[in-house]
Image 1 (spheres, rainbow, N blue to C red):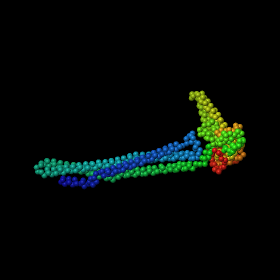
Image 2: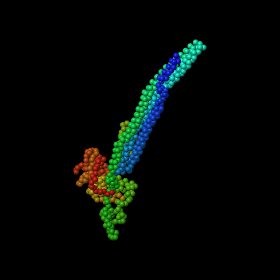
Image 3: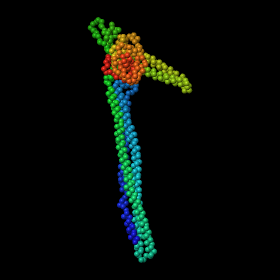
Length: 580
């Protein structure tokens, strides 16, 4: 009876076990390994792309730095000889090109900055978050995998225990049957064997129930593992990968947009370079050369024929370059001096930059410009000394009011020194102004009446031309003046020269128009007031002193600051040509 019961009970659990329970629960272990390798590769790809963008940013920064250094290298240096070169339109165009190139370099710095801000920093933070998320997902997967493995081990353990208990119950049953059939065995031994068999059967029954319980638990957990937990984890890993791929795509799009955003500004920089090239005016540059190097000498007259075959008195032409005061005693040395403009002695002295303080070794026009520049420099030095004197005076007043701050008498030596410097500079300025007035007067007296009507070639003169000047002697071959000093009575102030210009009977022709950029109140004598945006006629160009002569109508004309107006010259304006 016990044997039949035992056999039916032992066969029941085997029928209840599903096929999957006989398999190892490591079905997806290889898949987890593959996914882990793939996601690790995905993170490395993002890091590699981030490194690529970082190197591109470093290239942009290096390129911008090299462009800036190149632009700075060729920029105009202060207080250098190059400042004179930038009066030419080609040099100014080159300076504009350098400025545009500097802005162009700035756009590459913007590219590098945007790449760093919008891609490198963002991806660096995202990679850290991605690593943490990946670690969390695979940790959940490994934990679920470990849990199902532990359940499987418990099931296997209960199964083996149930099998062992069943075998022991069979052996106990067989022993009891053998004892029960043996007539030589006492009744006590039979009872003992029967109780032992029943106990083994009870243990087997308990093992069976435990095994059934673990089996049901494992099947439930296995079903949840493969149909709920693992799909959910795989879904999260898939979403993580999709976000990673999408983020890389967005970064690549941003990479292109960073360049696209600066293209309009880069285009403006290139347009600025094109406009700078278009602003070059070859004719104006050549005219600037003429104005820079014209000497102010009048062209020599015809050379008279000297007949050496006659032993009698030779005649001398008044238009020749012989000394008119020695016409009765012509000599070979004087005849050689007639072609003095071609002597290289003057050129050599100009190259060396040496000469007297009054610049008498220079040609008249060059001498005027040199003296004018010296006067400007002296006035700057005077103003600088005056500013220092005012500062020390205020400090002295503070010391007088507050003796604890310092001794006011300690500033007296320095104030005395500054006053002496000011007196010396003012004396030097008056001396140069006298020389300047002298050369301007001589230039005025030597000028052809048609010189006043030249709209462009007389632009560097600082004193209007006087048509009613007395004839003067010509200059000596070395560029210094040899005429009689009786002409000094023609020296006068700049304001009276302005008045003389305005009192001329014949009005000067217009050489162009101008538009005022700022309002100007002409309070000084010889100037004219103008409103912002007002259109005026230009009758005399800036001669280097910062003033342009304009006309509002037939009865109203005067000087205005050149920096306050924008001049439009008439290319058809006619004027007399000044010789270099």
